[in-house]
Image (cartoon, rainbow, N blue to C red; front, top):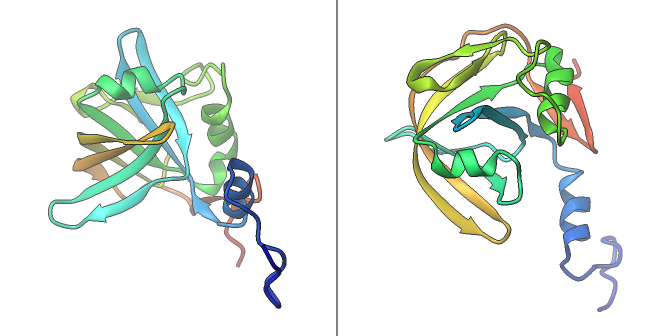
Length: 169
């Protein structure tokens, strides 16, 4: 492989290359929730994407080794929560393995379709799962929006260079 002028030295595709490149990609931060057999589950996601306007659909990725995967793999409905810059601690809690994600520090309630709904988020949706598409060690979950609320408080939280950040003015 030869260097390309002005572009540095290209590297062969690998897990490390993908992670390095996506650390430079600023992404919105969401928490996905579902009702599991033993209670609520949830995880922080930066893979949330709008898929279709008609019908209104979105997608997100989840690793098959994630603690939330067994519940998400069976759930008919999931909650999608857009986090605000005031919720960095919440994002970190839902990203941390072994954390008590729905403990006293997390304000939430049982929402429509039994989906755990987080309080004080800028926006949330309840979605009906349409498909779970294999994608390497992950699944891409496609879900149709059922209902939600886009009128919560705060500015969006972003993930960039391995850190949660607010927007700069």
